[in-house]
Length: 539
Ligand SMILES: *Cc1c(COP(=O)(O)O)cnc(C)c1O
Image (cartoon, rainbow, N blue to C red; front, side, top):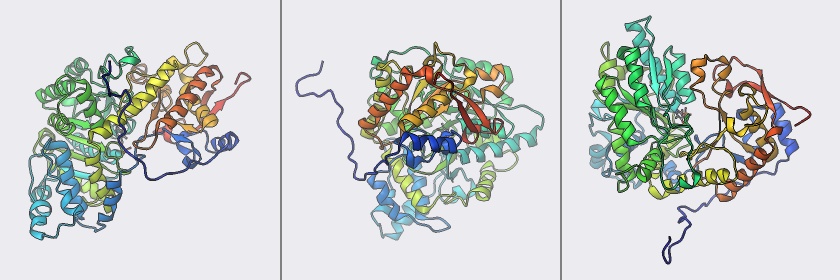
């Protein structure tokens, strides 16, 4: 019951001051473009879309504070101002909880006291955490800025794979995860290590849509019993790393509880295996913990983030997600932690990573980013942990899900933090669509053709079901993802998408099967192969 003067609508958290008009494009024009781009969602011209739910990656609107920070961007080749600011923003965000230092304000406010700048920013020494500073970062590098998350993955996996092979050329290695993201899985595989998914057992359990504001089953968790059994079975020496992805993008964007993080951390530590986060949506995950996990309601987001990260030995991250930035990624590991010790027996692992970073992306103080990008990213880290923003963000995704569920469209419930996922198997129940007909792809083609809305299949096509063993097939979910860009859409956009998806669901028997027309064996084929919808008399 709401009391007098109380409202049952949320308080708005932002105003928009820039408008981009959407072009009027006809269905015929979209059909021509679809045909000429081989029906690949990744190749369709974005400017011809009404709504784009392909990815929430790098597609966020920046805030006014981020735009303003671009003017402070420093394009120097060595040790630009933003480098120091970003490293300290990372300490603030992931390590300092309720006591951020915000030395970024020295730069944004034009501090001219050089001694202050030297003491607080440029020469200050740090050690022991995820970001060594001053002389310690030179002696023991442990913070690596790169353009994207996958660059961090490449740095990490290619470097440890060559160390592992040096030590033992014929051994098989495994990296378990609560759900490997596609680029993570591909980077691990490309380096001869075997990625393993240990999804939570409750992932496909039913959940009533009217309970979404009340509770959350944290379906993104890792199955800790499976992990223990896996370690027992393969042996500690076969597992160079354990990964936890927060939130679990591949498992329908579901959050991971702090209880699970602590459990997995305990298991990893007891085996002396380093535990890493794939930390892409750390802030959204922290918001779920605050809202739904017992004991954290009175914690700030920053304090929860601090507690989460206190449990791990390192992390890779794409700042294109929760950084609110349009570009950026990083790799960070605990100074003299388990990872450092394990991989430094034959020379400092940090130095090896730094050499590869310089070889591939640029020197350590810009890592392939412009000075402007670095500033926008540093400011973004402070923006993204603000609770009113996060509340609105998660509320919008949930509203999208609730409206679809109310219209009878089968989706994964509860909604995760960044996306709504259609359960494709349920969607096509009662039709002739088989798993290797790629119905999810057919659905995305029709949605784009009729309504100008772009989404992404993350199922048998993307995860290459037809090329996998029966055992590996068990790790493939059949989903279509609607990833919601941050701070871009309002209720009118959501309502348009819901109406379009609902109408297609009603006409699901007319959705075409799809064949791969070119490049069926390409690696990461969902980014590059050509497709062909098979229209019959019925559709
Ligand atoms: C996006 C993403 C990545 C890769 O990051 P990029 O910046 O796209 O290279 C890795 N893991 C997860 C969970 C992601 O969502």
